[in-house]
Amino acid sequence: MTPAQSRAARGLIDWSQSQLGERSNLSESTVRDFEKGRRIPGPNNLAGMQKALETAGVIFIDENGEGPGVRLKKLKR
Image (cartoon, rainbow, N blue to C red; front, top):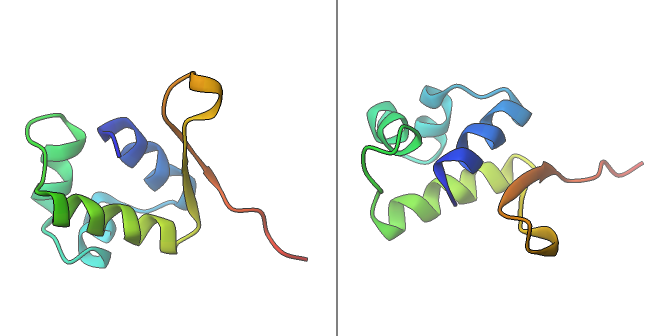
């Protein structure tokens, strides 16, 4: 997960940095510093952030080699 993917994913599900921190058991400053490119969290912390976003319905993608992105899961009808 890249900082840009994290920001975009939060935007899709309307979460603040604080909410992502809470749901991934990290501090808001960890999320903020990652998204601003100040530091990369440890592998377990980064995985926790991604898992929290995926649980909320975000899918991390890299379609056609055009670079990383995010989208929401399709809603089941």
